[in-house]
Amino acid sequence: MVSLKNKEVTASVLLKRLSSYAKNHPLYQALKELGRIYKSLFLLEYYNDPELRQRIEKQLNKGELWHKFAKEIFFGNNQEFKVGTKDEQNLAVTCRNLIQNSVVLWNYLTLTKKMSSVNKQTQDEIIRSLNNTSMISWHHINIHGEYDFKLMGSQSEQFDVDSLVDYELETVFAE
Image 1 (cartoon, one colour):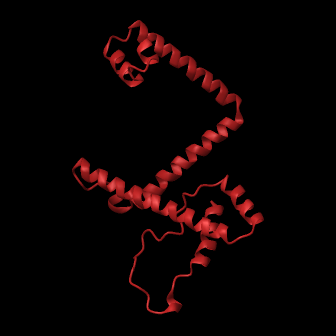
Image 2 (cartoon, helix red, strand yellow):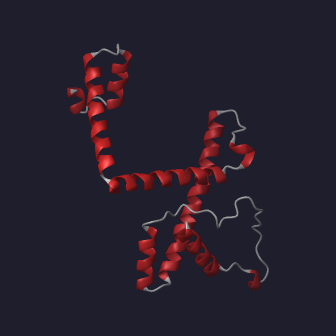
């Protein structure tokens, strides 16, 4: 414990070392009981504090939303890896994360553009709304569609960013 306190060893190394001993090692038993005390204190606080429960539930919902988003992005092959090596799997996961982060970045950039074009009162309303929502929104993205990145010929065919911004804000706040 002194080594842990003096930061000469990490907690994970200590626990790995202790788990290699018999389960009746006194230090292992003491740490196990200390963990139970902290767990009991947390559970009592969790049951007693509705605000803490709501904060934890909100964070859990964000995590589940992120996983649902990942599943939407990784829709091919029934969400199964068809590659054999660990490196190829890591590459696929990294590409999925890049796509997810790009969509979230797009949402932030779009929101920033919208906020720069509205008055202070509307900005305050948007900020208050953002406290109860997440920027993890992908319903405005054509995930399963066909993408054509050719340059458009005439000005009339150009993409209307402002109408998309309004649509995206409605989508984000509707969630």
